[in-house]
Image (cartoon, rainbow, N blue to C red):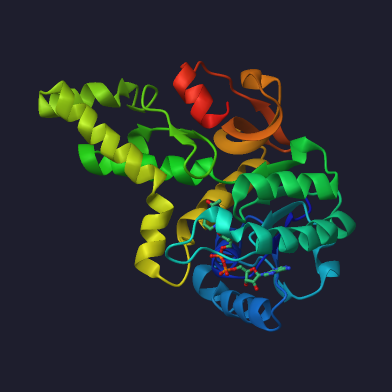
Length: 304
Ligand code: A3D
């Protein structure tokens, strides 16, 4: 079987971590593209020089030329400015829309059959813009947000209950920002509803609700919490893990159910928008959408 090729557009913080994850996990050969000369070349050389230590032989190439992404199976886009303290994701719109326009044209020309995962913010707008400019079939255009937001929500639940995060299942749907919707009713520890566990822990319904509300609020503001601490940029380890997990599901045709921003064709009663919903990811990209019932408030806030 031929090796798979992943092209990472944007060799900044998230792009660099992803390059290391793909190579060290033996998932695919990696091309790291950036407009800054030397940056992707330096990062890929640095990662490749750890190959003996981490025991991988995937090829890594840093480049400033689109021709090097030719025939990539998967393209992951992180090109664009990240937030600084005090900025909303929407503040990035004007600059990142220009960047996304040039990236979409480059990907359309050089990797026209690829499946594309977008991470650049503001996420939902960037996904829509990429699809419009590239004209790619919507099945092959996917936004990363829900995998990270769900992991954050699951982590807060695990820390609160003192259980392994591996046994926590919690999903966040909707947009990546104020409109995200952590699904409290469906959150569970190996099938046991979280609210039931919180009520047992505190022996007080009101207190349990207060604790859950605080975790929901922290999840919605989790990106900003990291920005406030780092001061120079936004989260990058966890977004890199999230996008790599989505790409892995596609590369290995795992049909994993992951919350992602995907184009809806009537699912959840929505037609023609990219929305964060549970999607089945496999070798063709979006293989399906899992529908679930939401109450009216959740429907309105998430546009689902
Ligand atoms: P950063 O470390 O600044 O990397 C961005 C890279 O993009 C830089 O190296 C730039 O040189 C490069 N770049 C700029 N213009 C172009 C271009 N035209 N073509 C190719 N590369 C270009 O940022 P980062 O890696 O921390 O974040 C990247 C993006 O992801 C930002 O927009 C963040 O807001 C976003 N982000 C999204 C999430 C989600 O969960 C959706 C989480 C964290 C960050």
